[in-house]
Length: 245
Image (cartoon, rainbow, N blue to C red; front, side, top):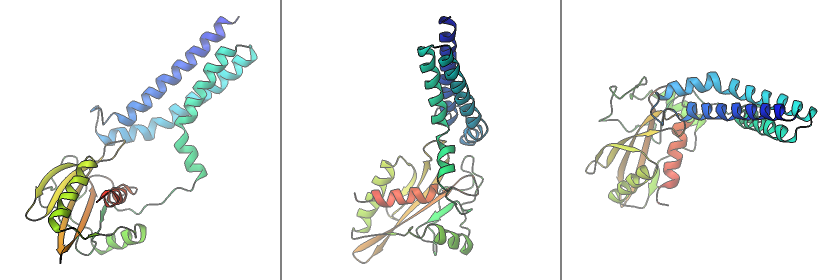
């Protein structure tokens, strides 16, 4: 009587671990080179919650059954499976408890909305790009100011050359791929990836001399998507916080 329920608990636990593996592959498949970032994103939207609910449901039912037949080992295995499902549902649970943050429908963020740094090397031929590198103008600038009022240039006492070197250091520390750099013009262009789905965004950094000090401007643009859900603003904030640490 005890062996059959125990095997059932093992099957449920195995299913939960396979489901967890499937979710991890979906989330990090682009990083592993299995598919393009948009494919992983679409797979996550389509399958992640159904997988999580299935695991949670099987875990709960299995745990109840194992308790009824007094199989402690099987109940523990099923309960663990249920916890896996619950963990996978964490984003859903958090979003239901905490109000979802709203983001403006923009994907081009810069510290200088009056004169955004221009891309001179990266262009419309960049792989997978759907969005233009031409700045959207006053409408985009107004939406950015309302949503991300804290985004501002770095004002530093460093010389322009020192600020340029520091900017390159920060970019490398953040894992950006430097596409082009011009030490004379004090500017560089780079590509950065989002941490999970590995979406590629393009970045340009310029340094301007201001007397004995200098100013650093950053612009970050998503290759695809109307809204970046705050990713570019977060990247610029991290750059500013890391600068000269």
